[in-house]
Image 1: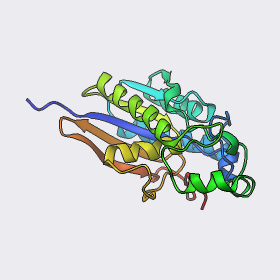
Image 2: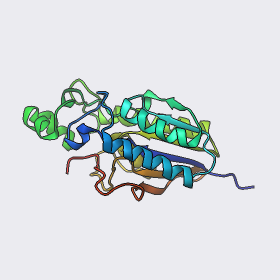
Image 3: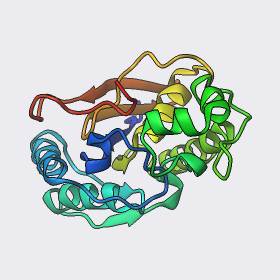
Image 4: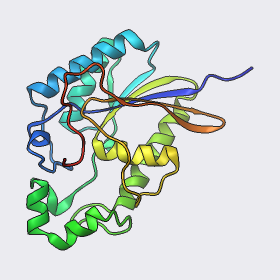
Amino acid sequence: MVKAPTRICVIRHGETFWNADRRIQGHLDIGLNPTGLRQARAAARRLATEVGTVTAVYSSDLARARVTAEAIAAHLGRPVCLRPALRERSYGIFEGLTYDEARQRHPGAYAAFEARQPELPIPQGESLEDFSARVSRCLETLAAEHRGETVVLVCHGGVLDVINRHVRGRPLAAPRDFTIPNAGITWLERDGAGWRIVQWSCTRHLEDGALDELPG
């Protein structure tokens, strides 16, 4: 008998005012703006019509993810389980600055950040290597705990970046070749053959103009 794959739906939080300003949030606890609230409700409505039985809804404990998850969980009839391991990367000295401000005030550190040097931490923040290890452990743990089930994870742009690379076996240092829009819906499956991406960051349920995770 073929076992059903584990299905994981991963959703980036809705838009914040800092996303719109291209301001780096990291671990700073920024809430959703009105657009983000609409996006969260739109994602919730779409999942309610598309998904079957969901075992659990997990979320980063930061407000922008948690509020998005609460909208989704209400439609799916599940509580939100908070997982700090799904937090955004700690961006240290960059937090609170726009990308342009971070580049101007900390040129050396910003150059290293842009170069995606995995082992080098942002001053007062996390290295890409440590961040990836945190997120990947959480993803694998949840997949093992919910084998053959369907679960929802609500998280952040950086977390989705790491998940994409983990699932595809892509190096952390490689340039990004995918988008990560606010409230985009991603579907992953895990079975005996490993991970696969079924759908990546779909935005059909959203108004035009969902913002990507990186400055553009």
